Length: 48
Image 1 (cartoon, helix red, strand yellow):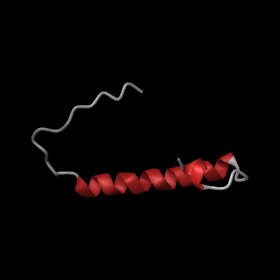
Image 2: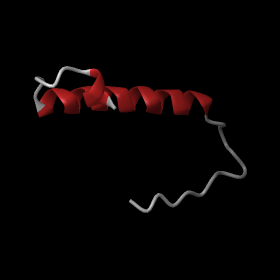
Image 3: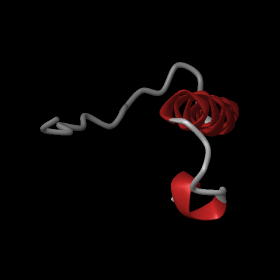
Image 4: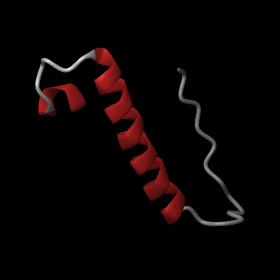
């Protein structure tokens, strides 16, 4: 996704930096929407 939106001439380090920034943005968004002290939290198995 990120690589398709950027020039192909950038190095892998640049892609890694941008990906980290995007992931941190997503994490911030998720944390802002999270319910504190959730009584029934989701139990996910990502199988990664």
